[in-house]
Amino acid sequence: MSEDAASDRDDRVDAEGDSDPTAGLAGREGWHVEGAAARVHYEGEGDRYSVEYYAPSDCVLYWKVPPEDGGETAVPVGRETVPNPLRERIRMDLDAAGIDPEIERRSL
Image 1 (cartoon, rainbow, N blue to C red):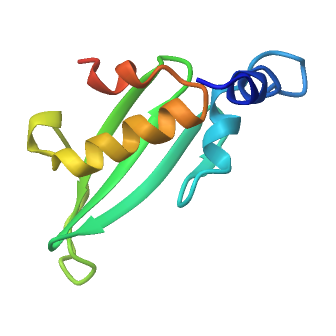
Image 2 (image 1 turned 90 degrees about the vertical axis):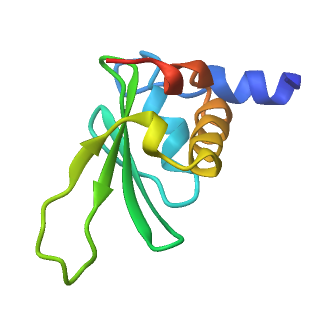
């Protein structure tokens, strides 16, 4: 990692001066931050997912989202059912945001 990337990670703090892990995700493509959580939506090969990162528990959850006209509800899914390219993208985004990308593999 470059010194600039490490410096960027150190600069992400909240209003109280504490490190804010979601601040780095806010600037990543597609990510939206609400409080201590961040979410990104992914659609590919006919599947739709919502991916959520929760700072208090330092974990990532995957949700399978039904088609817009499906009328169903999103359901949580296991990592083994999520396409590897999506999981890799999430790890890259976490790393770029200063969050340990290994937490993506953490089981709940």
